[in-house]
Length: 324
Ligand SMILES: [Zn+2]
Image 1 (cartoon, rainbow, N blue to C red):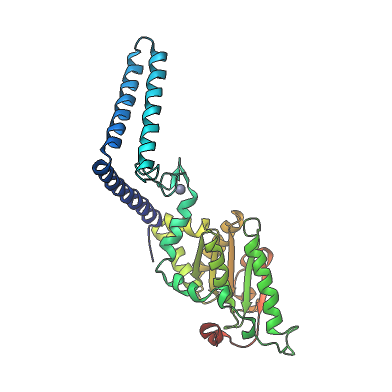
Image 2 (image 1 turned 45 degrees about the vertical axis):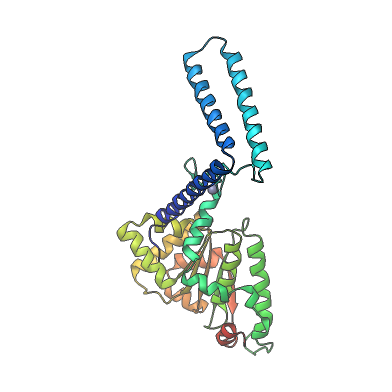
């Protein structure tokens, strides 16, 4: 797992800029060889601009007239340069530094605020070649099939597993479609192998594709992270868990249940809820078990701030994995 996320992302930006810097040098060398006149024009423009700023400082006589004159000369030269580029079959921006993101000029920041592309690059670090990146190639809605779920209703449940899944999936789609506006959190509960993690991953994939920051943690990993944050002051990790758009906590109840884990889990829930950053939690626990295991303040958050979806039916893991 990548530590120091921010540093890693900044490295991406500096690589982007270096790459473009080198590419621009090559383009200039090419033009210098094929149409040296263009480079001559660029040098003239640079010289005129420099002269102009020196003369502004020195407050030369007839300054206004001089500035207008010089600006006109520069414009003419720019036009000439464009004409030459086009006539030799080059794009107009061939000799310009081309940023991938013009908003932040490939720095990741606009002033002190993170640019939109920062999230995109962070996602790249977190998911490319990562375990979850692989999982999401398989766990996504295009591999989802309601036929995996039995149409037979058992006497213990009010509907068939298939009908139940159809209803849950339709609600998940509205969660995805309204993600920007919703304050909803989802709690998937029910016995193992009923499709909870699969569905969480499907949602993760859709939201990642839309450019949201999604972080996936098993409950066990999450507690390890919370220790890392508490005892090693890992601010980057804390920022990631608290400020990601969606935090998926898989297999709640499998983590070591200490006083530390319970109270840190409560703090995390609380901070995410206050910041209106969404979560999907899945657990094999029944409602009674959740109530028994976690403190009342945790349960009241879970039951008060999450939409509960009960999963039931046969174990579908084999079908989901092999599409059989
Ligand atoms: Zn940007």
